[in-house]
Image 1 (spheres, rainbow, N blue to C red):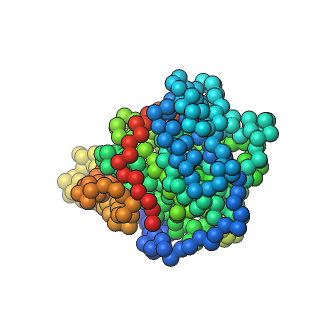
Image 2: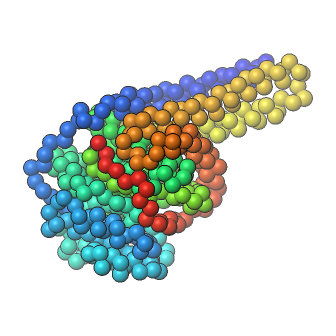
Image 3: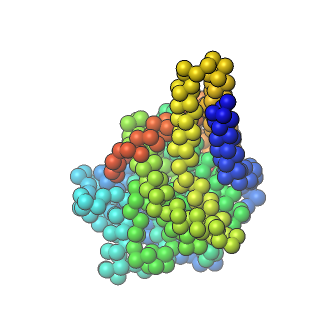
Length: 428
């Protein structure tokens, strides 16, 4: 009976710990239900000068579309330059980019591969050539399409002078391709609506997410380039901002459309890199984040806590808990039958409730996200409803991915894009 009480106490402790640790996101959820039209950004007093920066590897098939959307911005053309780093390309990405009107640098380095190194190379090159006369840098991936008002809307938030970086509303250009692309799309819409939007309302730090964000040139100068080279350099940058008390804002009206993987093998490779990158960030920065949120309550300490909960390996800890209960169930065989029944009842109930809660929680987030962003998702009603129910299944595939990332050596691999345009729309 002591074992039964121990298992019950262990499960209860973890359930209470997780509930308390993430309860603050219920506030985010409530604020995310507020209609966006209640939040208006003041007009900018100044039109700033920007450089749009694209790191691309073998993206000749899609990069021309992105450059075209940047050249068609409702923003003065003399205040927006477009740069492409053709990073270890073996196709004609560089030539396509030049024909589209971008300033192109070609980089070949097989030892330092990935977006972080490409960005660092460009920023340092611009300084060396005396071409770094910009107020900020807009970072994009080659498969993006950019809303015509993107730069002007980002400029409104940037002109306030309150932010070292600003992230955007990330929609999908191929939402309806299949359950994989839809899973990504719902996740990023959820991030915009129920995480970054509430953080902005509360004056807390937002997080940049891969693409479609603006960085102040002052931040680049202060850092001496882009010193973030872990597998998830965007999260590493967000952590660095939290630790330094540097604010990251969110612009709800600045919209990009991102192409998501549709093949599970590519999705596996990409999310394996993300999971490994999260482990890297957690290993390198968790101690600093804990010290940061243990300080006197402030915007900085709260941002450190929020960031810590973002990078904390919650999936891994949940799997450890599940594994513990499975081991207990197996270990009880051979014990008297009444003990076996009690242990199976306790651990079995916990396992079922954990899996059910995980699924239902994800389903709820999927439903709320799709309902709140209904007009921004340009696919049929039937597909919207279908992908709400497949969203938890997409997220469940993170379980083997998270486990594989623990033991597997992971390197940056390119994701190949086709330029699908199935669901372009405009955010409210």
